[in-house]
Image 1 (cartoon, rainbow, N blue to C red):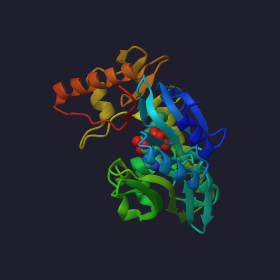
Image 2 (image 1 turned 90 degrees about the horizontal axis):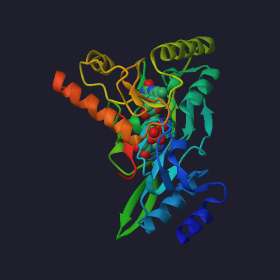
Image 3 (image 1 turned 60 degrees about the vertical axis):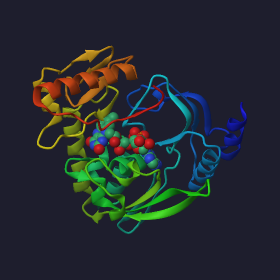
Image 4 (image 1 turned 120 degrees about the horizontal axis):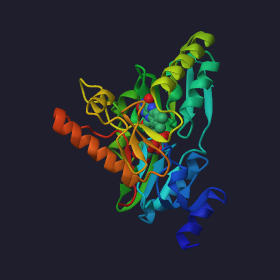
Length: 308
Ligand SMILES: Cc1cc2nc3c(=O)[nH]c(=O)nc-3n(C[C@H](O)[C@H](O)[C@H](O)COP(=O)(O)OP(=O)(O)OC[C@H]3O[C@@H](n4cnc5c(N)ncnc54)[C@H](O)[C@@H]3O)c2cc1C
C-alpha cells in the first residue's frame, strides 16, 4: 500500500476502500476498467474528511451513485472514486421524506408507497441513487425529481488562500437550477448528501397500483435484463429519439458487443463483452447518421468518465 492508500484507509476503515477496483462491477452497463482507489464512506462526516484529504493533496476524485448513467472508459479511472451506496438512510416526518445520497430510487419509491405517500411513483423503475437522480434531475412518465424535491444538503468546496475547506449548505428547490436532465450539481463541484422530498398523502393501494402499471409499461418497452445505461441520448425538442434512430434503420446496429436495442432504439445494450470503445463507436455512428439524415445532433444523456 502506498502512503495515500494508507491515509485514506485510516479515514474510512477496512472494508470501505478497494484498490484497482473494476468499475464494470459498479456500472449498470457492466463496462469500465479499474479505478485506482474506490471508497465507500458510510456517513457525511467520513465523506467530508475524505474530501478534505483529497483536496489538500490535489488528488483527482469523482463521486458516483449507482453507476446507471455512466460510461466508464476501458482504461478506468485515475484517482479516487467515491461511491455513496453505503450512505442509505431514509427518515420520515409527516409527508416529508429525507433520503441520503446513496438511497436506491426504486427502494425509496416503494418505501414512500408503503407509507401512503404519493409523488415518487415515477421513480420506481429508475435504477439510480437519490444523489445521481438529483444531479441528473431524473424523470419518467411525466414525473421528475424537481417536482417533489424540497431541499438538499450539499457539501460545497471553498478555496481560501490555496487551502480548500468544505461547508455543509442547504439548497432549496429553486437553488438547484433544475431543467430537463440538468441541475446545478453538473455545473459546480457540489457533493450531494441528502434530499428532502415533499409528498402528498394518498391511498396506499392506488399508489402501489400505479407503480405496478409503470413497471409493466417499462418492462414491455425497454430492454430489461440486458446491461445498459438507459436512454443514451437526450430528447431533442419536437422529436422522439428512439423513433428517429429506428427510422434511420439503426435498430440492432452493432459494433463488437454494443448494439442499438431491438426493443427501444434509444437504448444501447451490452450483449456480453462490450467495451466502452464499442459503445462510443455506436454512439458516434448514430449521431452521424441522424445529423446527415435529419440535421439533428443528438446530445448524450449518459456521462463519460475515465482515462482515454
Ligand atoms: C435500465 C435503465 C433505465 C433508466 N431509466 C431512466 C429514466 O426513466 N429516467 C431517467 O432520468 N434516467 C433513467 N436512467 C438513467 C439513470 O438511472 C439516471 O440518470 C440516474 O439518476 C443516475 O443515478 P446514479 O446514482 O446511477 O448516478 P451515476 O450514474 O452513478 O452518476 C451520474 C452522475 O451523477 C453524479 N453524482 C452521483 N452521485 C452524486 C453525488 N452524491 N454528488 C454529486 N454528484 C453525484 C456522478 O458524478 C455522475 O456525473 C436509466 C438507466 C438505466 C440503466
